Image (cartoon, rainbow, N blue to C red; front, side, top):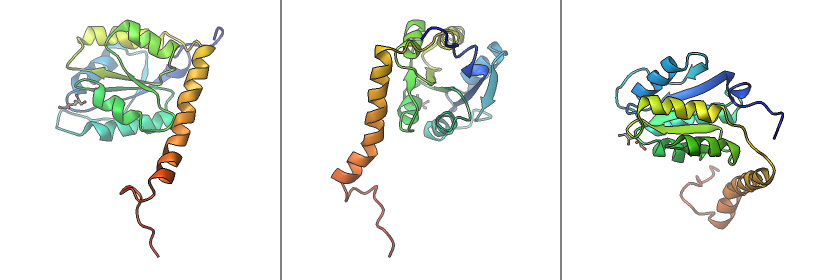
Length: 176
Ligand code: RB5
């Protein structure tokens, strides 16, 4: 998609970020190491034990609602954050451990949330991953067709589930 701005030059003038207790030190490091980014820190504020789904939800919902153009989530491995964030419609969260995967998650998957593992990555390398991610842009073309298939699957997922499994426990009995 030539002519489009990268996340770094357009969308990511502000980035939502959150972590759990394991990811907290890396969250703080990234904010300090990348001061030109307007970070919207959605917590936590310290290293007290918290549950990563609560903080993944905050960033994912902010991105899905357009309150933040993109987001960064940090936990011990990045895995729990990515699993949770991908439950939110419109979010394409990628957990990556290399600059290469970071670039490709933007170029091919149009990832809008980057998930990092504080117990996996050296802080300096995590910073490079964030920079590589922000500097990469979605290529569109055949990749846009594939991302569209993800959107279609996402749109039909709840509907399919509700139709096929009307008695599933997640369906609350209607009050009468
Ligand atoms: C917390 O101990 C750890 O489970 C969490 O940070 C994350 O790695 C989960 O995916």
